[in-house]
Image 1 (cartoon, rainbow, N blue to C red):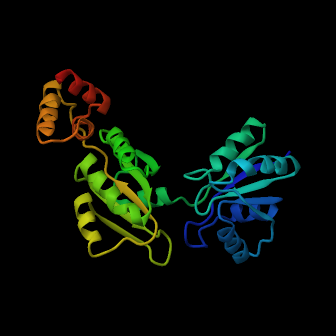
Image 2 (image 1 turned 90 degrees about the horizontal axis):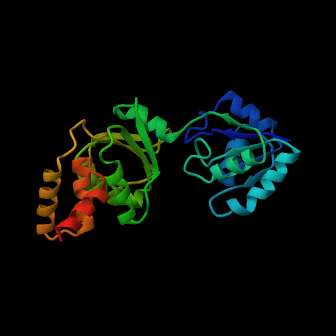
Image 3 (image 1 turned 30 degrees about the horizontal axis):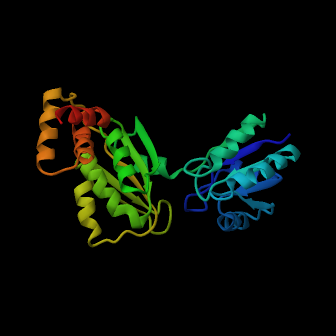
Amino acid sequence: MGTLYLVGTPIGNLEDITLRALRILREVDLIAAEDTRTAHRLLSHYNIEKPVTSFFAGNEHRKKAALLAALERGDVALISEAGMPAISDPGYLLVRAALDEGVPVVAVPGPSAHTAALVVSGLPSDRFLFLGFLPRRGGDRRDLLAQVAPLPMTLVLYEAPHRLEATLRDLLRALGDRPVALCRELTKLHEEVWRGTLSTALARLESHPPRGEFTLVVGGAEDRPRWEEAEVRAALAELRAQGMSRSQAAREVAARSGWPRRQIYALDETER
């Protein structure tokens, strides 16, 4: 039986790879890659000739059995399009399946966009919550942000350029005007880290249209006392009087009060 190696690969600059990662890629029998084109560029750069097969969101269930069979014959390296595999990609499914079959799984640590962004953001890095890509549907995205709004730790998330403005607007509404770092094209030629607040980030988009993949680092909630029930009811009544829906009002008060949205929603039920 072989070993499944989770190999970290560069998020931009091809020099950001460890000597151990290069050795493992040279020694394994097969490389499973989220993007075979990116994999071939990396392997060609380092003169590594190994068979490469695809493993991405869309074929992961079909390819899982074939990769488990390959692991019965020898070692397999799993690599993401960039960074550490199994983070915001389907690699987790293969890891879980390998463990269930008793296959050894070994991490070969390497670059990661969310940790790189966190350490250059200037925001607290002792405690953070990684959110990956937020839900694409606006309602689902806002529900998730309402859940994390009261948390005091720094938030880190990924976003595509065409959704950046909508995400910043939802962050501002759900969290308030917190500090943020917009990290773009990390370690690449056009790397940029912009630091400011959510409101100024939105204003900046008017003159700087977003290009490339973004990692956002957002400040955590201030350490503030949880609202009393009377304060929650008053804020809820005010927003409802302004014509806001129950769901929207509950979400906004949750972001400000430290109360779970469902409890606030239930309070509104009692007022009817």
